[in-house]
Image (cartoon, rainbow, N blue to C red; front, side, top):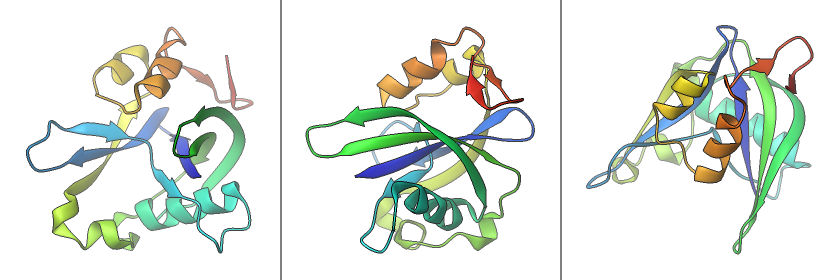
Length: 144
């Protein structure tokens, strides 16, 4: 099982990771990763991944989407992040050059912002784009 965060920022943006890999066009993913044996819950796994990938602390609001793939399920959580410190990042993806680069980017949470990147998987990009302006109701953290 894998977990990913749709991370809302104070600037009404969304944190993404721009992936740069040799001989491939750049693409973007939402932060997250695999649930490990020592993670008590998928939410615990997401919090751990946010610390590792962003050096940040998040508040998880709710599970909003599941992709049940042939290999494993991928859970998407709506969450907020107030600050992050890339100097605090840890994990093998940052120390193995063969894996390519992982650049954190804040993307405007608008239809135009989402359309301006090649967000993977396409199913999640479409989910976010379905909300005409891509706006989340920050007052109660529910999709409009």
